[in-house]
Length: 167
Length: 218
Length: 199
Image 1 (cartoon, rainbow over the protein chains, first blue to last red):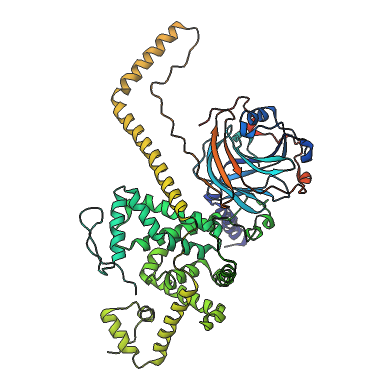
Image 2 (cartoon, rainbow over the protein chains, first blue to last red):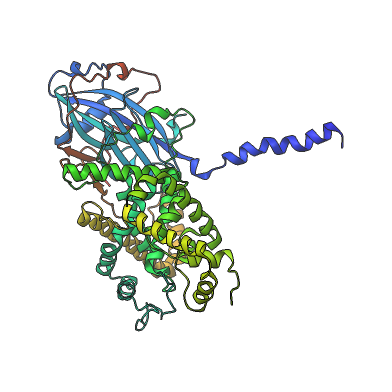
């Protein structure tokens, strides 16, 4: 067998090996989870040092619920992560800070618009909440969390619409 | 000494025959299992109460993180409930539970691989970065001295067990702590008796070397 | 008879798992082999001491809560499954009239089509009942923290209120990581102007 024929036979097999190794169905991304941290206050919103306003629709939504109703809101950060079939994932919405971490994993196979997630909220590197909740593209989970600078943090966990799935 | 149960009648129908060992605990388990299989949730609650200590202890020793042992132990019993219709009295209920525990721990260990398209930061998401003193599962209070001594010894043992592979760790825990027979361990781990033997031999050798100080002092 | 036992037999003997005739055979073989007897004693010593170092049983914290969560998970699943069974039974019972209903539906559609300038969708004959909402299980490891869950129809969201969680120090600064407007960074929960009905 000449060299060329040997390469023609062996090379495709070698190239196929990494592909086969990566075929882990558990790594299939079934959707995208979006985690946001809002600062909510009845005082001065500039205390948060954040300039990012919330969309009017979100403000309206939050204010419609008495427990989440505040005079002002700012967004402190957001993180978008894939929802894997069989693996957990972590969101770190405050950028380099690990003060707020959200661990999530799929409990059931999600539909196009909803997913049942196992969710853990970690604050200051301690697990403070473990829950299971169904989140949809229009119905997030809000967690009213710790106080900070005269306000409170609200952690939002939602499912991103498929057409806007991040990379 | 652990013996495999002898044949018993099907616990779902008819009366329960005594097991070959005549172990009253096994007989009680068989009665509770039969009632639970018939849908009696309170009987299953009794089974949970009876076996949760062993399952929880086993998982804690396996995964080194109290954080999730509490959750996983519950998952074992939830899965066991759903699998109960398929349980037959050929093996002890405990052995069957440890089989489910084995699967749950394997799944958990696999799921703990955090991957997100290669962008993830090991330093931030490494579990070692999580506060080691964090109570991530409900914790009972303990006196400071007892807590310190307990913690130190526990840490030594966990460190030694941590140096074993999962398979070796599980084999030595099932044999030398939980008291299962070779056959039962093989059933729980889904391997041959020969494999159990070799894993056990290696694990014991390694642990004896690592825990030499503790071992000789007792 | 002093036949040398195979590895499996020997391992079982060392670990006191043999009984009956097999035990007798190996015991007889080992009677004049002090190294084997010593090995068995060593194995017994190791098992006893290791078992004293690692607990075989350890009550999980909050044992009542431990059980109640399992009970809840089991009964919630049973409720969902019973609804699924009811739906399945209902469908089966209704099956006999579906062909007739299909023909009637087609005729109705045709007749409506002759009456209106444009086609209109015909209401479905059977409506699948929605699966019952499953309230989320939740717990807080820290006994000082309480969590209240509720489904807010007004906000169109599930809300969990944490009470007793430690405040973040005011001097902690997230400004370096504060959100910056980016073209693609849209809040998906703002897509609908009206909050969705709670599930």
